[in-house]
Image (cartoon, rainbow over the protein chains, first blue to last red):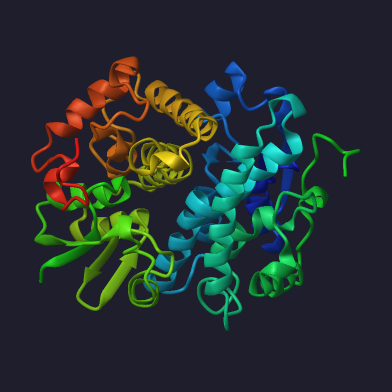
Length: 212
Length: 212
């Protein structure tokens, strides 16, 4: 049965799952959420899809799962891949997925939203600088971790990589300069070389297909 | 062997674990981190305790674990408690722990830091208002989820409750008014009635013992 992923192209959190699905070679299709017109906050969406008002949501038959970290964990149970092979690796994967949710993608996602998708009259440069500062602190931790290391946790690509890389593949300017983080830069190239890798906009329908 | 928790009283992320340890009745002791004087960012701490520069860290013999969500998961393996009883419950626990890290404790923790512990000359009211807005959006989701429900996931207290409640037990003013969220208010009373519950400052040494 085809897996369905409620998502939208601009959502890095959705991209984590879309990328894992595609690299695993699973049969899946995107279901577009009209996020920028409130599509994840309609009464129907909150009642029937996700009370948290967020993307992504994976539907596998009768099962409906939200939170990218839960979905990635579920897909690992299904495929036996990307979840870590030992208890230590499994914990290391979860550690970086949690850190990503708290410190990396959360800050990168908000910063990218504030700098690219918020209407100009609501823009506040102090708030942007604050979020960028937190994002850059996270990038520094990740770049340090990737010194002399190919993948975040374990000897191969895992959910930790899918989770942490997500917002870093978007081309819109939001304060992340790949060349300033050489270990991250090489690691992103390594991910982009995986069979099944696609840019987020090639995996999921965009809200603004004409934009940069 | 006594479990050691690197922590400090003002850290809600540490409190999640301290509370789980105490409610489980485990033999543990806190190891104070001098966070406000950079204690979690010294070269020694980054190299030997946690490269993420964060609290808490649990030490169990030779094992050293960071990220509160990983530690809670580990303690559940150890005790057989608080992790959910079925695969569905386990996923539901993880879902709320991830949401908490991304949307709830993260925002509440930052807001409390900015309003209570940042030096006044660095205070920026626009940034505080932005963080409070995000915190209140999360509180609304949680309050809605707790309608006609005693615990966040499953029929009894789990790691989802320990994770999400953490910053909500502090008395310092940071924009969270318990009475504005009646379902959260009742749920916090329920948690405070658990055997072993203690206020964060009664479980972990504070940096500012004289403060309000």
